[in-house]
Image (cartoon, rainbow, N blue to C red; front, side):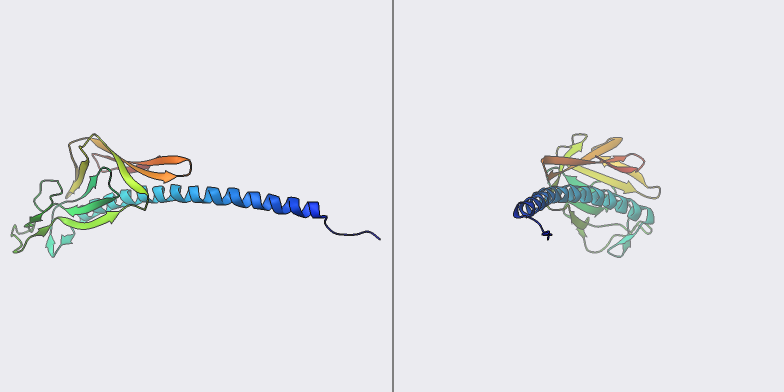
Length: 188
């Protein structure tokens, strides 16, 4: 009569192999999570830039009045950025209160408010690490209707935004490029 079963050594080897593979898988899973958060942040920022461009093309209203351009304001070293309406037509995000003009009639709103439409955040662990050209830490990208034309402040024909995030094995970056005709691309 033959014994049909596994020896203790065979069972220990199989359990050890499963444990080693589980540890390797879980370590890589955490690293991949950071990579995906960085990619999601880059694509979300690119989509928000496209949203500003679309709002400008559609001349969406802001606080009940139809405005000119919309844009994105970025600060180097920050994990958030601002979607803004260009109330005074200078192509820049201006902090503080402004009287926005109705583009169709030229009349002013009786009360003033800030140009900020929405403050948006990158995923946790991601931040804006580099703005090219060197912008002394701030960059405004504005879209002026009807085409819309693109206005960078400071003036440039193309800008590069790097987003930095922690991932397995160190720090990684994603790059977003916007050119003077409004083409937005995300590259690694």
